[in-house]
Image 1 (cartoon, rainbow, N blue to C red):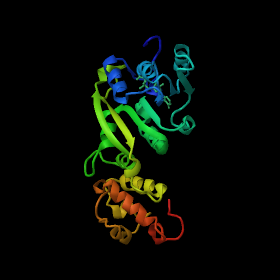
Image 2 (cartoon, rainbow, N blue to C red; image 1 turned 60 degrees about the vertical axis):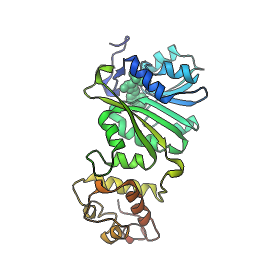
Image 3 (cartoon, rainbow, N blue to C red; image 1 turned 180 degrees about the vertical axis):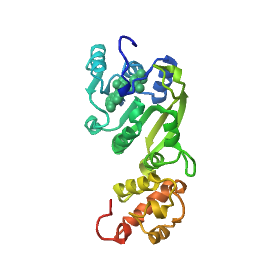
Image 4 (cartoon, protein in one colour; image 1 turned 180 degrees about the horizontal axis):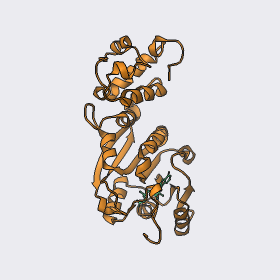
Length: 270
Ligand code: SAM
């Protein structure tokens, strides 16, 4: 039990118990009065107290009913607007613009949650998240490294992703088996590459990394023929992990042209 609460594994409840790291996260966010702050999974409020103290008010999304009840008892409604909901399906657009998302995220859903948050890119000012260290390594990875993959490309096409610092397992109760790291994501805005067809981009990236050991000629065969790869300046014999984010964007935009993927006029095959 932690402060009278039995941690629920299915909700990824490893509570931050070291005030030093809580302070470092809040300092990295640097909330100011009037900021549109949103915490995902406030839990036992390790971060929430200081975030509210500095921003005056914030919103939060918490899935655990017992924790939501405790949070409502602890914080006045004009300080914390609490949504008892699943962050994976929560519509963050209802919270307005210039959102500043903060969260010590449940590690079991970190990738789908990041993909969900990325869809609100235009409404985001920034995101600060604590995640399993390996996930942060994938988010920030460069091409031709073992960590580079779908998560790296999909996030780096929209955000500047920075790893801030690591947090040892002993800072949490219960202690997880892995180390954690804090990352900042800031929308690229004017330097964001123009992607003509976002859905096609997502499909190409997923296919290229879905079968890591295959050449692009084979991994993308359902979407692109070899000549289209060549005309986009991409070697069909190379593998997905060697392509930069810009390469994926260029390939998508070339395919999204008038003839479409595989030179067909019909929609691309799934
Ligand atoms: N922020 C607290 C801290 O730093 O100690 C708690 C962090 S704990 C790793 C994750 C929190 O997210 C828990 O409070 C958990 O109940 C909540 N949570 C888990 N899955 C969630 C979901 N799908 N939507 C919203 N909250 C979720």
